[in-house]
Image (cartoon, rainbow, N blue to C red; front, top):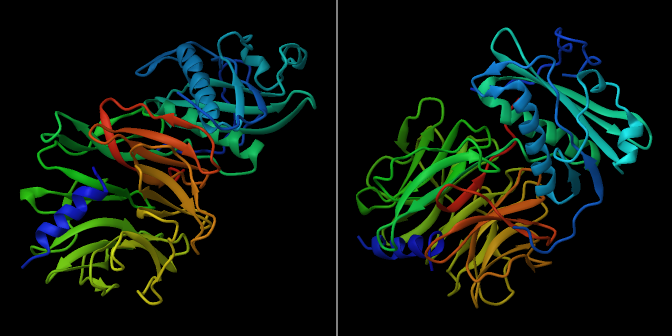
Length: 452
């Protein structure tokens, strides 16, 4: 067994002895002829039926920016929107290659005959404009081609360096309008980036856009790290580190980069998760030969013990309303999933499907719990909070560590026993897709939608 399950349990056995883009509602650009005013490897699964054409986004004036010329950015923004919609598998996007390029004036007044001629049911048009203050405005319009009506429009004013974020937000706008659900493209992933031979792996915290863009490292690899988790308010990240060969939970403050231990003293702590309001962290701590789940304010304080059973209790994850916690425990002789109230009361086992279960995580919708099923390999599955309706979503042989998209429609996990990579699967049981990372990766954690 590797990353999440095996090293944590091995450590327990060993130590149990003694600044962002803004979405502005604003008027259209003043350069040129302005559009109307804005309100500013896949396998398996069923591809959605939304046919969407996404041509190149024109610019009122080609301007060089630190991110490239606005004419080129119009091509790249369209490419990202197509990629996002395709990744969701609810859409059949086309473009921007092979499609006519609209003029700037056609952005708010489409030539519907052209788009009917290419068989488009829905049309995304927009523009990229460089502003005098050094920002970019990305316009995003969605049209029903058959009905010849505008469905929605949004404008995003962003620093030049965050042009990719404007593309993701446009894709979220399209996703929401056509599917009736919130999108998940303007999100980030924190994970463990790995390199080196087995037994001497260098593991660093890394953060990136959900699709692998804007990748950067948060730690230098001096100490092994595991189980990073985003705070719902995205102000901090908590993780476990084997500094000096002792498992210990830390909190990384995103604004300052400061890293501090969650619990003072020399305790062995691990498997941290945030409460939905970002005020608390639940984690496991080994004290006097027993490992239980505790709760502590994010800023520190006195840990509150929530479980008190023989064996190892770990991996706590809150329900979205904060009223319950799902966790794993071997108190009954094998690794199983349990649910309790947030104060530790009413603890009960919910996994009875044979084999063992680990790494449970509650869906943002509240309707499902994702987990790692252990037995004949490692696979990702889901069940209801009462333990019913168990479904296995992946085929293994070593799939582990699920984390939910903020809309509850997709799950990211890592695949590989000695060398891992990040993968994505639809919660409904659709196809899997590998997520691009510069190096090998494990232990992903999916952020909520970025704040506006």
